[in-house]
Structures are given as structure tokens and as C-alpha cells.
Image (tube, rainbow, N blue to C red; front, side, top):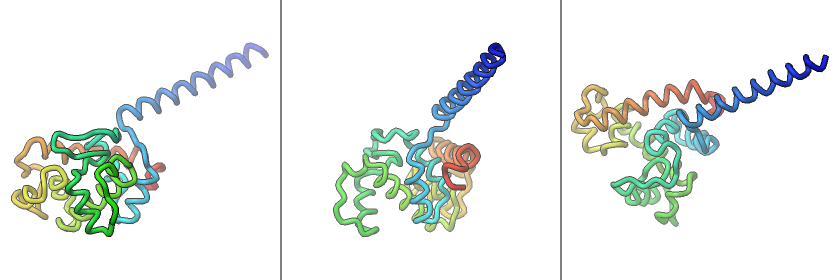
Length: 181
């Protein structure tokens, strides 16, 4: 009887370790944090929460302290100038650059920009993501609302868009419950 109990405890311990290992691997390969903010912003801005998570993954891998060589900051890599413009247009009154380090503010502004770009390009996610990465002027020159992935001439932007779209698919599968899908 004691041997059976010991074997049962061993099985439970192994299963717990497997679960912890699976969670650790998932966290390293496809991290997700701030899902409450992502769900909130997706609902407010009529966005796919997996798309928001995928942009954050591509931009910062959910590391909030990142600053790009272009001066973009935070989880969704928003430049201070873009953030100030979004704050002005969205009714924000007290924006300061240090707010970009706050996940709530950064995800809110990044989601606002993503929503705006999707509207601008008639829901074309490829064009919106290309504009998010390389600017609307470039996305307009490359085809605007009819832009296809294979028509993006910048290899970096083409890879970025492909990475986000792939990550969105993976977030929808891996984190369905957490993202409220």
C-alpha cells in the first residue's frame, strides 16, 4: 500500500513538473503578459486581442523597458511624438513621455494606432501592419489598402508583417482563454 501511495505521489510530482516545464517553455517561446489590458483595449477599439498581443510580441517580446534606435518606447514601441499626437487626438490632457513605460498607456496608444491604421486601410491587416512598422507613407506607396505581403519591398517590413500574422495565429491557439477568444 505504501509503495502504491509513493508511486502515486511520484506520478503527481512528474505531472506537476511537466506542467511547469510546459508553462516555462510557452513563456519563453510565446510570452503573454497584461492580458487584462489587452482584452480591455481590444474591446474598446474593436480589435482582435491576439493581434494586439502579436504586435507586442514582435515589437518588444513583452519587455516594457525597450527603446528602439528610432526612439520608440515600451511594449508596443510608440515614439514620443506619435504618443503625443495620439494623446491630443484621443482626448488625453496630461501625457508625458515617461507614460510610455506604463503598460496601460503604451498598450492603449499602440491599440489606438493599430485601430486607426486598420480603418485607414479598409481592414487590410498587411497594410496596417506595414504602416505600423514602416510608416503610412511607405504603406501608401506600396499599394495602400490593396497591399499584399509579397508586394512589400523592404525585407525587414515584410518579415515584420509575416512575424506578426504568424504570432497572431499562435496567440489565438495558445492563449484562447487568456485573451477571451
